[in-house]
Image (cartoon, rainbow, N blue to C red; front, side, top):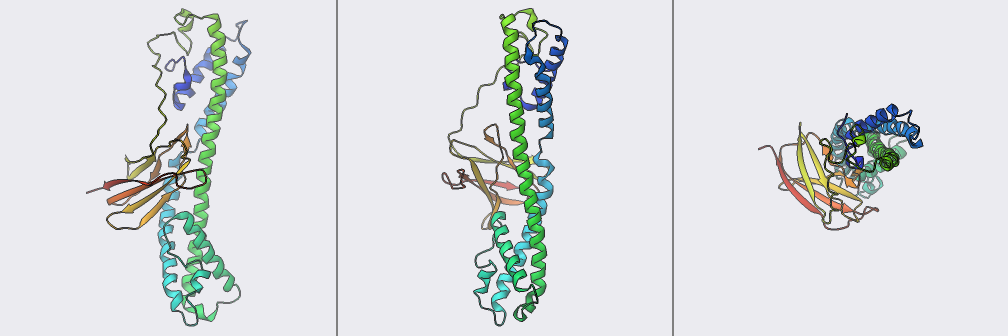
Length: 323
């Protein structure tokens, strides 16, 4: 039998799956009791739904290493070809520098995936539009580069959409798991109160064999204190092994999301990491980054409201990999 708890709302998701299974067994053993609460029939159904939701939840590790690494590689290749076009287009005979704006290349191309999607989409669409019948003569010198750009943009957009979808699936899975947990615990409380009404003394021997246990029973864990709501926004960077780092920040009131950026010191470009931070049980879930290079880094954490606007100043965390 799992650790006993008179308040299973406080135990972890993993422990709750075992604990609820124990209660199902206990209820089944008491199925013949004439006074058994009607809610006892609902609990096994809710327990199975919660357990399925818990195990079906998509782990970030199942998609982040592959998609994140592939996107980073495509990011570098795509930025390279776009910057090449930025440099070559204005030098083409018969092409005005204003053509850069038509290709979406009138501003600096940066490694911010959402911005990169927007720029790359415009560049690809404009090239396909002007070359749909035949490549304009003035662009023949960059035709091969343009076609390379189209291939890279297409692949990047596909991978980026898959990455976004995977994160959406993760959010949906967390929400569904928590909904199932709430329904399970609501039913458990009704069953607990039914049994408590019959045995109001928590030290009564009747409690010993139940998953709730007796008051003061040795295997009953102490109830953890409710965590205080964070009032200050700050970030942390933690090495979790095998070249992976977790980027995490607090979620004070008014902060609905956060943007994370990363800079290789002393003067590297500030590279976009993510602006999608998963939330579970009211707190941000660490965002894991894989295969980071060796060097000195500065992480930038910017708190955002529900509309993506900064809530307060960006905070920084400096850290070193290797060396």
